[in-house]
Image 1: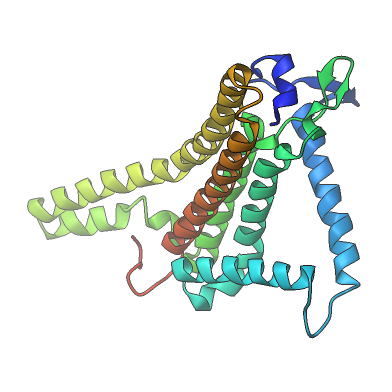
Image 2: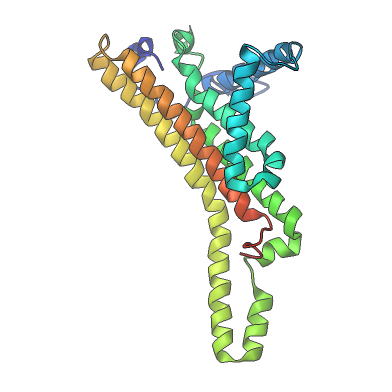
Length: 263
């Protein structure tokens, strides 16, 4: 957000509905998402035609960013698994990072239609963050099912077989297996509780930054815009890094590893 937006007051939690397409409401954040996607598409087509074996200029910068993301993900999930998830987790990181930072461009979020800003930073809309969280958690479930199989995946949480074998051995082992079953059910609930934690963390931080921008820059409109914009850069990058790293950690817990066989 830039200081020109302050005139509109503190942004509401719900995004502004601009128009409807076949009865489906298109919000300002949705329009910004399409803008970002089209921008990625156009830039991807343009840069793909100018790729060289010996990189220079923007290609060198992009390759440095890719290598940095690749090394970061590799440090979490391991080099053998990094190539598999880089397209997904790397795309999440870049998309969230751009979504967080693009609002800093002067004048972009000040474009209005009918007195309403047509562009709202996507990650300040809870619909966007919960959508990203749901897609990420479903991806993790699919990965786990592909690695362990359907029965193996759900067997990590619902340990009825272990319960039967435990009571077969005696009361003591049976009670321990019952506790293990209870813990597994809690872990299963926790899998989907990640949706709440991921979405609220990203939305809360980005929305709070928007509100503070209005409050602080409204009081010091001419002394603080540059400083707060730099803070916005830091917040945007950090939140993208946190979201991406958490998905990478959850991914490493969802696959078969030497220390992860059914836990």
